[in-house]
Length: 121
Image (cartoon, rainbow, N blue to C red; front, side, top):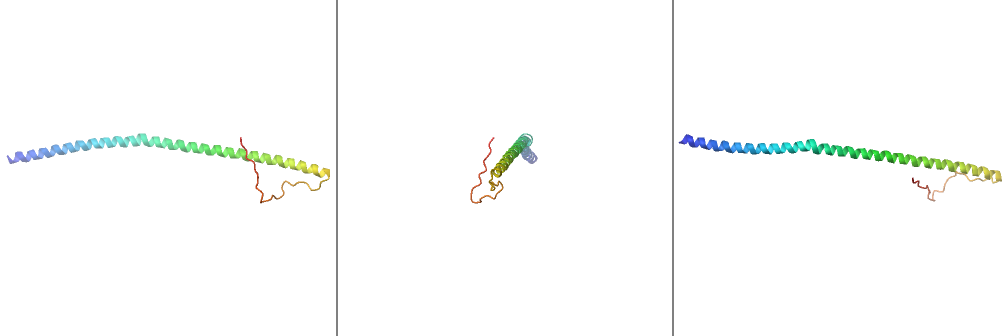
C-alpha cells in the first residue's frame, strides 16, 4: 500500500515535470522563431536600408561637389572676362591721354560690402 502511494506520488510528479518540459519546449521554439526572424529578416532589412541611405548621402555629396566646381568655374570665367575688359578699357583710356586708368587689382574698401553675385543654373 505504501509503495503504491509512493509510486503514485512519483508518477504525478513525473507527469508535472513532463508538462513543464513541454511548455518550456514550446517557449524555446517560439523564441527560436523570433531570433531567426530578427537574424534573417529584420537585420538584413536594416542593413539594406543603412546601405541605401549611405549611398544616397554619398551621391548627394558628389552632386554638391560637382555643383560647387561648376560655380567656381563660372566665377573664374567671369573674373577672367572682367579682367580682359578692364585691360582693354585701361588701354583705351591711356590712348585717350588719361594717365590714371582704373586698376582692377586696386585695394578695395574693406568697409563696403563685397557684392559677389550668386550664380544660379
